Image (cartoon, rainbow, N blue to C red; front, side):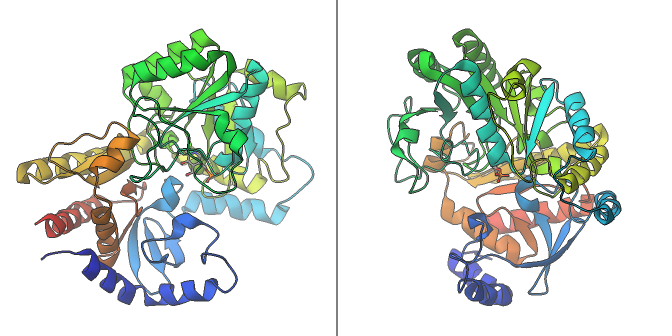
Length: 446
Ligand SMILES: Cc1ncc(COP(=O)(O)O)c(C=O)c1O
């Protein structure tokens, strides 16, 4: 049956009527209805009542298979027994002190043992804060000022980095091989924009030119190996190796933001790439569902923090409950758990891509691990190698229609064409996801 945006929207509004009404109530006090813009799902958010395993239960009374998992946080799904038990044990002891508790050290040990490039680590409450910490360390360590980042790379909502994460099809400033910086929000000072270099993904020649010309004043390159918020773009291994040797040669710190990609492997996506960054930013899964961010790296980079030159500190940084939840989560996440997640992702990708190819549909599932993208493109077989490819060749109306229609059929993916799996998902869940995807894609394109 033909699936259109109009029909899907109408069904969505009807099915999630209570969420829609509550959204209107929220607007009385909260601008835009929620503190988090990304809650919006087309016309409004879907309010959740509770989560359980791989499902969310909405206030409208529906159970949805959660393919969003709080934008990749909930790798173990919801209310995992090990995380809940650890929190229940910790809560009676109190949860906010002007003193450290022991948990932070335990979590630091786990991460330092797993991520080869991380010898020392500092926690915060969010990856945004830890990206800022990483940039501050890089500036202090190198004595240089500018930050280079990739177009389409999202590193949190701080002034220094919320630049060119979300340029739109209407506004892709500068040539492809030399994108111009563009603030993603009003209120970001012009001096921040002037101190930001924007690099094009997977174009080494262009990156080399920009970095060599600015090496004298560039402190770091901040990058994701597979981007998330600005569209899923996987960097080529040779490209990443090239950036690693170039930054080492030019005295620029390479910062890999593994906020999402720590999902890929016990040692992060950097392990799969065989690359050793100077600093690594982490977030999402390391807090087990509670707010936690971290920056880690070789000990020498943390001298500037240890000797007090660089101030990295906040009231709730390394919060004990978040550390407790993070320890419980990472303890469950052994190699077999990562393998299971990656195997489910591989199956979805292979089956859907083969099916789309076989039918000549311009639809792809792309990305490398349990967080991946799907897109309706301009022609069968199209590859997305950069943020600009994403905007130029994908059909965002179709992506929205797909997301709404998935919710209408009891699946909840990220609205901008992304899926994050969770460990409790069963083979039957994956069967259902593949079958429903085929029905909707055929309904949209047929
Ligand atoms: C790669 C990356 N870095 C940083 C952030 C910011 O994380 P937080 O929202 O915890 O501040 C995000 C959030 O989605 C992200 O995806």
